[in-house]
Image (cartoon, rainbow, N blue to C red; front, side, top):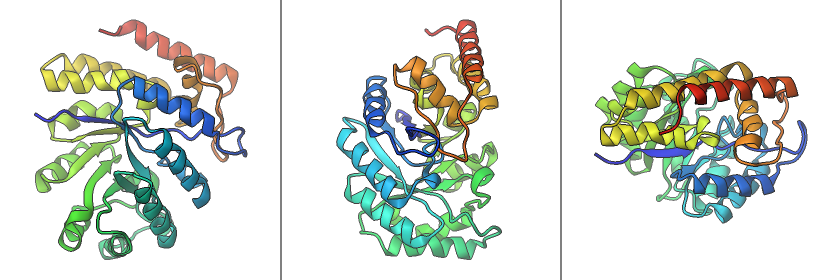
Length: 299
């Protein structure tokens, strides 16, 4: 059995709710994540507030990550509503050494046909170097644009060597099981921490998680138990409990509030329209996390 891959959907720190990106924080966070043994990072996705960043800001983040990635791999979040912006960001990320680009569907126009979405991805592939690789981003709770098996099949027909994988943040185990059965060559990365154990049983290649920003060792414990025949359910219960503890406070503000305590990082803001936690909320979240840890201590 191939070892599952643990990626971090990395946060983007801001100096204030309407301020600039804090690149010094990114560098310190990368060093901490590398020390925790994660396989790679995914900047500028949903947790990274990619859609609140300009094209220039995303390019600058890709530069910082490329320069300070260490041994970690990089999947860059490049999806935009405008095809031209997605092309520019994807080309830039690949040129800067990203292994693949995570590309969500164009999200403004809803009820897209499979033909329309496939046309978008094919046009993107046509505009990229032949060595570029895409990870399709299925996140219908946010984008409201699902990526159907028909779209994946169509892209395999036209650009088979450019389809690297798919991130499934839909929260539907049946969808993931369908993909691993219908496309055994497709690397499927689960995005829901609560579904990690089930996804691994169904053949997922690993996961890309917001929770890994602050709890990479807990996420890795599920993967290790799955690989070695350990107590997968106990490790999964702990991860699920942590996910539930954060849920009332929202992602990524909750993650940023925890990083100051868990990773010795400075306070980092989210960008409006997201709202940072109040001091009372941050304290309540910390207490909830401590309670989870007390009930399910580390091995």
